[in-house]
Length: 245
Ligand code: PXP
Image (cartoon, rainbow, N blue to C red):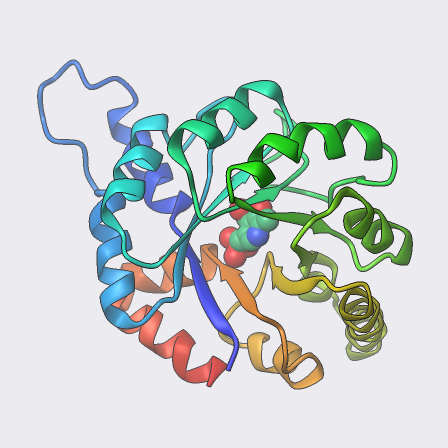
């Protein structure tokens, strides 16, 4: 069975909407840590956070607290910058997922262009690998990018499922799924483990898994946190896990 990594960024988005500056002395809510602990209790296999350069949702203190407290896998999504590499070395997540970052975007829009910055990324991640932190690269299912991820010494790729999720016709969805199936096969031949994420939700996750049943971990955030508003996080996580099973 594929694993579920819950992305809790949007719990922090809600908190920051009210508590961007905490001068009023109230306890900021909702708590990212409580969300992570509830998700673990419901059976999530890991917690994912994206510490963005602009700190729009997850804050440095969130990552430190999660690191000290959660028992499952901590996956830190980060841009490939010296600041973020230093941060990862300090907080020691189990895994980092390298993502592109653009200040103006609402969410991570495209995959990382590993091929274009191969030498720079390879050098940047060396200290992370030496520290025993697993490295993943969030990329499109493009053979050149998959090869580049293998060339930098990544342990995982995370296939960007945004185009699949946004497909408006069955045909477009199928075309994209075929790219993912080919991408997964190539990645495995190159010794990479394969995760997937972005835009997955309760109605498309089984379509994806039917085509790629051996994906290691699905990193899902927005749809689960949205459902949790109505049914609670415990139920929202359990429902997604049941679909994955
Ligand atoms: N994986 C990566 C690399 C992401 O950047 C995101 C979005 O933060 C996700 C997974 C989760 O995407 P969603 O919130 O659409 O489920």
